[in-house]
Amino acid sequence: MPQKAAPGPRNLITDVAGLRVGNAEDLDVKTGVTVLLGDQPFTCGVHVMGGAPGTRETDLLAPDKTVEQVDALVLSGGSAFGLDAASGVADALRAQGRGFKVGDLLVPIVPGAILFDLINGGNKDWQDNPYKALGAQALGKAGDTFPLGSAGAGTGATTANFKGGLGSASVMLPSGHTVGALVAVNALGSATVGEGPHFWAAPFEQVGEFGGRGVAQDYPETHVPPTKLAAHANTTIGIIATDATLTQAQCTRLATAAHDGYARALFPAHTPMDGDLIFAASTGAKPLVDPISDTLYLGHAAATCMARAIARAVFHAETQEKDAQPTWAARHG
Image (cartoon, rainbow, N blue to C red; front, top):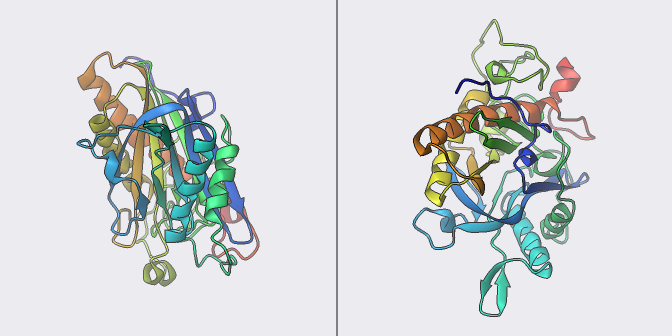
């Protein structure tokens, strides 16, 4: 690969042509939903490495299952309540005439994953589950650009020491393929080295995208707050996407490789109290030229891109009323 890979024009997952992202939030509840929508159904895989996942329709994404393509992916707050967000997305897609055709019926295929943000200072005393409506709202806002930080599924997210958030990043490879990452960071661990401003993902930063502070000079022992450890109030959920033509099995491998980005950007990651999960999406627009080397570099790009997206999520988080954690910007910005 003689040329250097570089971020796409937006440095968002939507640099993968044919994909759009929409966010919806409820600031009183301190929660939200993020939807990844394809202009056309896209091939999808998934890999789970956390010990406490919450998911919908992930079994059908295994390489041996019949349905290989999905209409949308949903990331949501709300723990088990948040799984209802995908129902709102599915209803809205059916109304748009989209879905897997079964006889005269259309059944939208909408896998989803949730994070736990129920004890983050927001008002959770709702009478009706808000997530179905939030899912439909997020779908309706899907576009090429979208905010990072305290938005969508990252609205009420926290990490060990700072607010979490929604992050995204992209990279354009010399092979002509694009890789993009989207992630809601609600980790038990920390995205920064100790309480300082330096991100674990610093070696992979592109053009100062999360502050340009460089790598830390001192690495203190990491401390996990009892509030995060005891309450199981965690989970980082993400999507890695590419325009490369991949099978469902290759998407599963791409999702697996992208988990290295979690381990490079969060300390610790993949704990028994996290439901860490990554979906992988392929629009199939650009065939592989060299299947061996192309898939190798796609996996490497997936990991580094995901690490950058995690740091950007924390970097862009904004202060709101009744926050359980300070923002990185309030402390170091």
